[in-house]
Length: 146
Image (cartoon, rainbow, N blue to C red; front, side, top):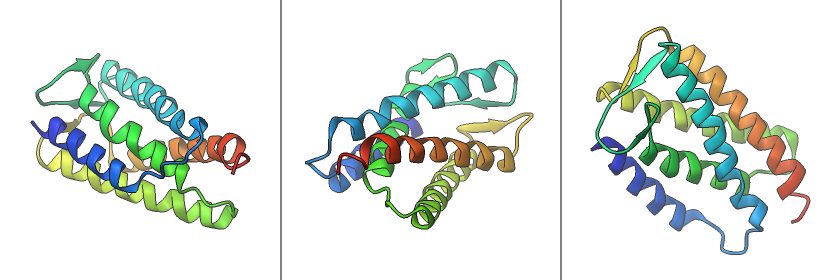
């Protein structure tokens, strides 16, 4: 049940915060993030790094409510609110990584996520890398249009 709750909450927040006049390229950050997330989670499962538990629909051990909930919505919101200044972008990445880390800790506390051969430092590194890639995408393809 936690994944359905997260899915619904993500979309409520998304509809509250989304700007209606975004170019299609901003929305394409969602599928890009989904590709990142699935490649990371599917491989992590096969490498026994961590396991994801819960009800719902799964794709190779990765909950689809998570994939099409917070992953998609956070990526679009991240790109939408990406500042143009590099220093502000760094702070923007730090804020989103922190939010995602808090979410991950909560999911771990309620036993929907189980670390086997993984730790929080590894998660933070992966999150920073993913948000830096999304930041590059946003700077290169979305912010040029605005």
